[in-house]
Length: 463
Ligand code: NDP
Image 1 (cartoon, rainbow, N blue to C red):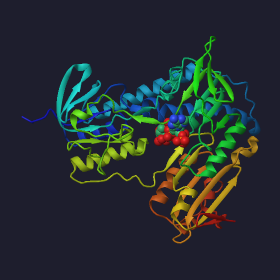
Image 2: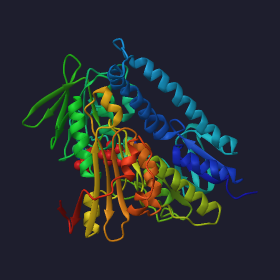
Image 3: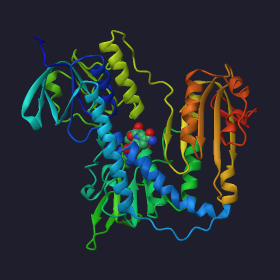
Image 4: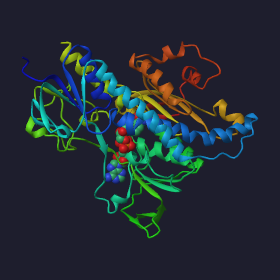
C-alpha cells in the first residue's frame, strides 16, 4: 500500500500546472490536479488566447480602411460585440476541454475544486470536503490583477478579467497602466471603435522595452487617435447619476468614461493556500520563494509560473513545468533558463523583442554598434497608411555578438520568435550579414543593415 494517495498533486490548472501534471502522469506517476475556476488558467481562459482573438477582431477596422487603396469597395462595416464574445467563449470552452482531457488521457485525475494545504503532504479539496495526501506537491496557482484597493472608487473599475465579458462595448474607456495589458487593451478597444484614453504614471509607456520602440509606438498610437496621458495618475473614481464613471486627475480635471480599467501589474495567488501550515515561505509581494530548481522552502513542495513572480509569461511557466518533471521524475536536475526570453506586445503595431535594450546594453558593454532601419512597410503604401516600422539590432562592437533585436511593426511577434533562436544561439552580426534576405519582406531588414546607424561608447551616443 503506497504511503500517499498520489505521487504528485498539482494545485492550479493553468499552463504550467497542466503541463507538469500531464507529463508526470504520462511517466506512469499517480497524479492529480485541482483547479478552482476553469482548466487552462489565465492564458487560455482570460489572458493570452482571448486577448489575441480580440486583437484580431480589432484589426478589422484598419483592414477595411486599407482595402480601398487596393481597389476594394467595402460597405460601411458594423461590429457586433456579443457575436465576438460568443465566438470567443466557444473557442475558450473547446480549449478548456483540451487542457483537462490532456491530463486525463495521460492517466491523471482532475478535480474542479479549490485546493488548500493542510500540511506539507495533505491537500484539502474544498468542494469535495475531503483531504488527500501526496508525496510531492506542485503549486502553480498563478497571479491575478492588482486590485489597487488604495484607490478610492476602485470598486467601480474593471480589470482584464472583466474586459473579456463586458455585457456591452463601452463608448469610452479609460485604462490605467503602461505595461503589456494596458497597451494591448488600449489598442483593442480603440480598434473596436471605443474612445480610448491611457493614463500612465511614468514618462514613457512600456518600461523595460527599448526606448526607440516605446517612443515610436506611443506616437503611432496617438496618431491613430488613442489619447495617452503620461506622468499622470487619477486619485479617485466616482460613479455619476447617469451611470458613467469619472476618473479624477489631481489639478487637471476629470475623465469621463463608461468603463475604467486598471492594468497595474499582477499579484501572486498565495492567499489562503495554507502555505504556512506546509512550511512554504513567501516574499514581499506574496510570491512563493523558490530555489533554482523551483523547490520551495518545504522539501517536497515545488512552485512554478506566475505564483513565483520570476517572469510572468506562459511559455516560461511551461518551461518551468518541464524542468520540474525532468528534475523530479527523471532524476535529471534542470534549472529553468530565464535568460534571453523573447516577448511580444500585441499592440497595433506589434512589438517583438529579444535580448537587451540599447540602454541596458550600454550599461553592460563599453562599445556598442546600433543598426536601425525605419521604413514604411510595403503593405501600407497602397493602403495610404502613414505608419512606419522599426527594426533595430544592438551589437557588442568587441565580440560582434547581437545583444538585442527589436521590431515594431506588422508581425513583429512572429519575427521575435525566430530572432529568439538566433540570439539564444549566440549568433554574431556577421552571421546575420551572411544570411540571405527574403525579398520582398519587412523582415529582410534584419539581415540587410550592413553599416551601423550609430555607436554608443561608454554610454554616450556617437553619430
Ligand atoms: P506590467 O508589469 O507589464 O505593467 C504594470 C503597469 O502598471 C506598469 O506600467 C506600472 O508602472 C503600472 N503600475 C504599477 N503599480 C502602479 C501604481 N500603484 N500606480 C500607477 N501605475 C502602476 O503588468 P500588466 O498588468 O500589464 O501585465 C502583467 C504581466 O502579464 C506582464 O508583466 C507580462 O509579463 C504578462 N503579460 C504578457 C503579455 C504578452 O506576453 N503579450 C500580455 C499581457 C500580460 P511602472 O512602469 O512605472 O512600474
